Image 1 (cartoon, rainbow over the protein chains, first blue to last red):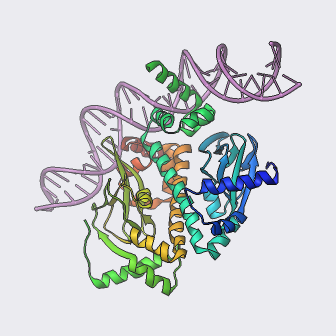
Image 2: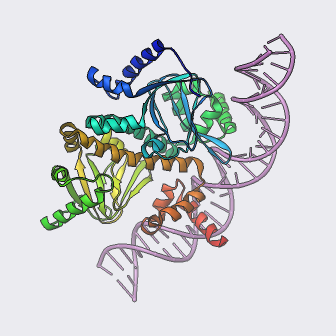
Image 3: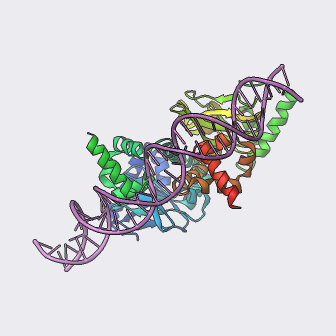
Length: 204
Length: 204
DNA sequence: GACACTTCTTAACATAGGTCAATTTTTGAT
DNA sequence: ATCAAAAATTGACCTATGTTAAGAAGTGTC
């Protein structure tokens, strides 16, 4: 469920969006005037669903504040695949690209604000401003690199190694994400994560 | 090591390249005249290295014939991540995008011919023909979808389930890829794949 | 601040897949 | 066709993680 807010808030968030976007795609004032028409600022409360399985992902979003969790349901169990924090993209990307039903749920892990660009608007941009393909390309390239790192991790590391690397590289996950979701992100059960944490604690 | 061939062969392969590319990116004759200047046809014998770990991936390639294997070395062991057959892209993509050293080796699994577009040429294209960003975007989108499916598989399926799905969806892998590589692609040891195959055989 | 609800931890036991070592089968070179 | 090398299989045993069940520690609500 989407939440509402004031015009002033909306404008502020749009400015933030441009700033956060800057690293991926620095836009001239002129370009921004075009782009910003296509952005929708969306606000969610902790626990709200941003996207549900089976829906087409219509938005490519950048997280302005808060964080989101991407997961899928399998045999009655949740499997967490991604967490998106400020400055990162949040999108069920395969669904977005193909405009096919998403296998993933996206849920607000905390209160959060997203700047979301609509699929149709992006297609229009691609058509009328060919250089905007660069935006789509850059976004998906970022996504791709992330996915590849995840896959390498899943293929080559033990659960404990993944946990240790997570602590080192993304301590924010430890701080913000409930352990049961982290466990599933590490591809183990919460009980196994507990054991690993206990063992690491005892060893030091 | 790259192999050589005649002018006629070269021209033929260029034509094939355009055809194979068509599904990803239909090009007008005019566009093709520009694109084809950037393509290099490369031919390898079975076992040749197309890219080694530590090298920057300079080419985005489409497989015209034969097949390639992408793998990385970890603790003295090979881990296979991808096989690319005719019509598919073959590229150490993160390295290509970031122009940073590749973690992957790419090896000719059979004699093969690739149509490869050079990184620099592609950047020029992006610059001078903004619509060509669409090519880069489409290629990486394909890659992304593939990576996501792999990740879902690794996260949610047992080795046996992965093997069965492979048999069903990509029987060509069974036919063309040595079991030791398939095992590593399924993220298990050859001994375990043997056991799975034996069990499946006895059950029917 | 008491209660209910969720999350986290612990322990005992089960299992998929890993390890090691030996054997069989396949492949490739001559 | 023969032989050596590589790939695939098998069996005995091991280990990390899963399963189940219980209890402890948080958290949010009135």
